[in-house]
Length: 439
Ligand code: AMP
Ligand code: ZN
Image (cartoon, rainbow, N blue to C red; front, side):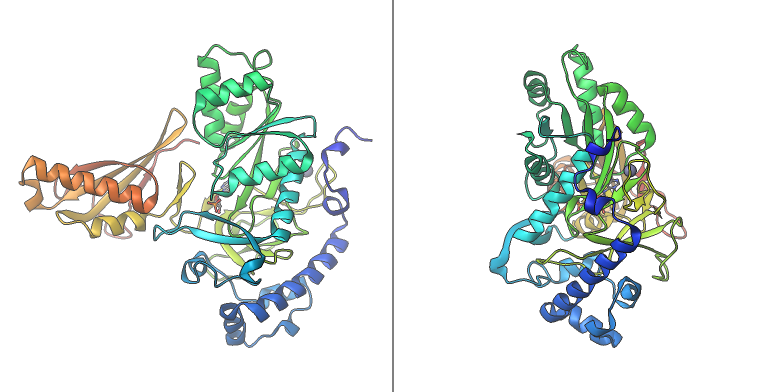
């Protein structure tokens, strides 16, 4: 057995030949398209509009004929109209924040939870996790997929799970130390924060803290951040990727080669498209990542546009897996920001401001990272009238905006009311965001 063979959870699927994989994907795609056409009126109408029927989809080659799906579809058909199963078959709802203040929700059947758990079991195994490990889940456990995904994967491996959820850093570290936790799952920014706090507390990784690896994702991060986390915690830090609409974390995961994230291609088909034309791009080229689920039954997604930008490769990985790898996410095609793990669109903030008397719709969002935690400042211009109003009225408006942002976007922001005409105007596309985060 090679040094790392034991780090593959399902060699049959993770190491199958590309030809075999393509054949399997084709069979599963045909079934999924049929299911979607028969059960989801919106998608059936979209296929009818394009003049195609399930009979036109015979293999992965035909994927490009299918219409795309978008995040807006999840909003427009909220909460259950995209289900391809009976509602009684749904055993779980997970979600993430959306632009209207309502979450984007996805329904999972027992099969879907099972598929997702499997993907996460592969993910954790690739980072070195076995049944002998103690896994601390410091992703939020709730509607957000991070916590449940990590819990399910570790549970499937028979590891000992410590479901801490996010926050309460001192308590996290106490448990980590007392239980001898060996594997950590959380966002990379929280991993760095935990690392710093561990050092501030005078604890020594290797002596007081026994972590060996971590699976970190849900937000963009860089190689520099990896180096920092690995040094702070004395571990291997692996990147993991996922999104609520497709399955949550575990859609793709890094092996210990740390050279791109293997995509669970027996469950999803990945494409890279030109975001402007929608045309598929060859391996190696950077573009928008699009996923088609081929084993989900609750809410299958066909050609779902993630708006995440990356590239794919099918070059063989030294770990032995044949699954394609995606590069780090290098950006987005839309203006979505991820702040403290929450998806934030500037348009949400604009909606709040436009609906508030006394302020002009001129604003700037300043995003930064202080002590490894994201901060958001919203600078908004007062109208001339407001500027010369009483202090107590200005304070009331200030509080109203802060409360509204918290309720619509789901995170707190520092609101700064600035003088009329002080937010820079631009002649072309307005620049509304300054993202100072050095990841
Ligand atoms: P959510 O559905 O709330 O879990 O958010 C999914 C989004 O989070 C994705 O579309 C990505 O933009 C982002 N994301 C998740 N994992 C990663 C990762 N490892 N690197 C960069 N972005 C990520
Ligand atoms: Zn690999």
